[in-house]
Length: 288
Image 1: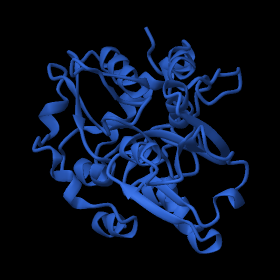
Image 2: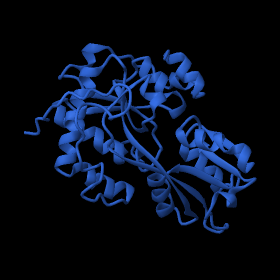
Image 3: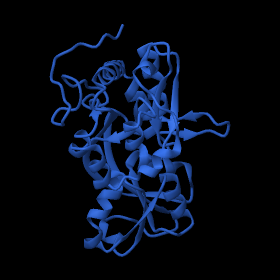
Image 4: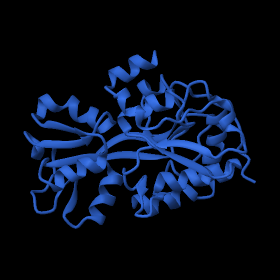
């Protein structure tokens, strides 16, 4: 599928890609260069901006560890609004997307994915002083804030006629959360990890209904960058085997990884089985 058509179909705004002017080509991936990744800063707990301007969070700690295992001298995170992040990847403003990306067949036709790093359920967020959200009927006719263009936006939009809710789209999920706090929206929909973290950190908010999506998240690369995808996946597999990703998930997402969790188990081949771009060639990661 042509990339421009892919962006149009998902309503991703190319204008968001103007957030950064960096361009990268093959030499940037040299071992002497920092590992450069794109991410949506402010999407807590994945990428958090500290008061001193530094970044932290699940994705940031993953990026730092991947750079170390690849032998790269540090890392750089390029702040890119989600609505323009795929266009930013295509424009080579960064080497890959570090923001944990839900893997779908349509997306995999335009990008290469690693194997899954963790699961992705959805969860609603609302004011603690408001009514409980126990079913979708509780949101009938309500206004729901969401980060523009992501899978939660698409999920809400697909059900808008049925439940008569209004989808309010924001450039960042942090802005969507602020809309709930300001009573400009009745609820926010995001990943279960993001919602749970936000509710714990803000006493005015609470988590509600969880949607078991059956989806998983991984890292996204350009279609022509199989070599880097495979190198990063080797690092990810080692991080699964030694428990690094499981520890980060428990710390940042509040979810303990059991022995059968995708965060602990390596899948055969490179990429996500069943999706375009998957390479079933057997390999053993060098975790020395």
